[in-house]
Length: 223
Image 1 (cartoon, helix red, strand yellow):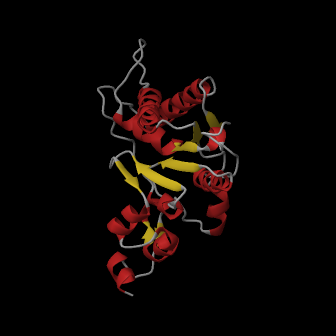
Image 2: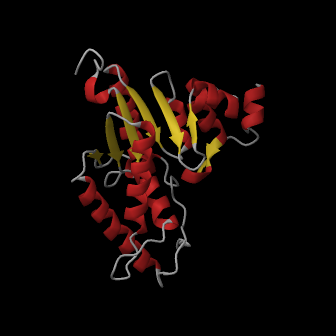
Image 3: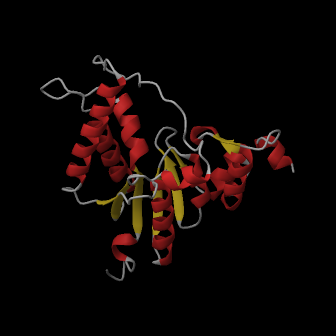
């Protein structure tokens, strides 16, 4: 720490919603290794995070993954939570898997390789058992704010917009857009403080959670 940087390492923290970025990289990046094995998940993730580090120049990078059994607590409350059947991914590359099992094995192998590489880089990695990445990221954002620092959450997940505040911004890598308080209000017509209520009432298709019938964004804003 110094007079110019009183907070130290936590003064400007880039927090990566890592599982979503890994899956997106896996589907979109066509890279293969010398043995002809698909490694797009690893290559795409590292390239994306590297680009964000160069863009935002954070004092620290934290990569957060879902922990083992992270969805079980919520599924015990609502059994349909994230309970959607998923087809094989249509990958942006010339090599295709023949069965869903082949795809799952590649996903797991690449994820293990990625974690091993991240453990040898100057980043912090979190994957806490029985906790989803969302919960860990929310805790970290609040902790960093308490220490006097600021956070940038890197994610395409709209749920993180409820965290936007003077000490936290959310960057969408697909929209190339930084969400501040004014940007959230401009796009959704809702203040980040009310974003959780908005998601509760309108539902979340990606998590297989229904909203209240007849209440959409326009109706909610109107009332």
